[in-house]
Length: 398
Ligand code: HEM
Image (cartoon, rainbow, N blue to C red; front, side, top):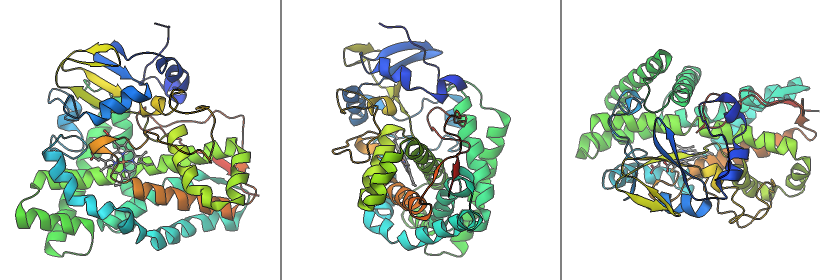
């Protein structure tokens, strides 16, 4: 096997993991002794096969991993970290709130928030930071509204959510998490525990009230599961969409010809969003745990191994995509794995797609000459391999 370097906990590696992916998509999964046996699954067909096989590849975190017990879900099962039948029960409770039709009802509100965020940069002219001025803010405001939490708390949320994501990103699964991570987890959980009690006393039309009713009426959801589900929705709906907007604007800034295509034909924007998720996805990979000895693409993987399903590598597999290194907003078909696949396929995909399309579409419409402030600058990334995103992205707007 060819030599290569793979270390998700090294910031230099994280800044550009794509060279390692190019090696990995050429070969069967590798086993790496990174503390535990880790299998790196990168080829499209291997990654797809793992995602579709929840019997052999479980999403339940082994209890011995500190992050499972001391993370934001405090050991409770969530749909992201469970297998059927628990997964089926938990997902069913919220699936109708995330259908494309339901999400369409949020469109006017998402547009209004986007406009209110962009207006400062429009009035000011000159330069703006895509991350600080829209990408960091829009998703947290939208998910807070959906959950029925006052939007004026969004900065506090964002701080907690960032600390949780960064802490989890820096910690290897078998290590004790750092104190700032544990503090943010405690703050987030106690805020929502109170919020749930408040909704019980004074129900509204929001999602948390609906979930409280599901818990109280039928016990379809335990109290611990209820809290974990609300925290999951906040975390999953936040940083991912932030990074969709940021990674997308970086790709567009580097490919002005693609922006011209979108300007000429805005109907291409939904396809551009799919291409961003394929080309430089906010979620680089996900994790599974083998329930028995198994074989993936010719590699024998023992029971109890950790499997890194490298979605972003699979999304550039030349066996699946023509010219995979090319950013092409007209790409069709585009069957990427950036939202996962199988029973855990991203619940929030319709929401992420709509937020991404509105944010990026509005930036293109508002700033006819936008470009990267410093095309030669090396972009600075936040501290997580699995959730890939920029700390700032400066653009010239005129
Ligand atoms: C571009 C933005 C997003 C990306 C790239 C993304 C990606 C993903 C991926 C890859 C998975 C599968 C994880 C696995 O199989 O282990 C997933 C699951 C999930 N996502 Fe997203 N996501 C995004 C936005 C959102 C939003 C806005 C929400 C809203 C609440 C959300 C909620 C969820 C939930 C609840 C799950 C777990 C589903 C299950 O296990 O059945 N995501 N997402």
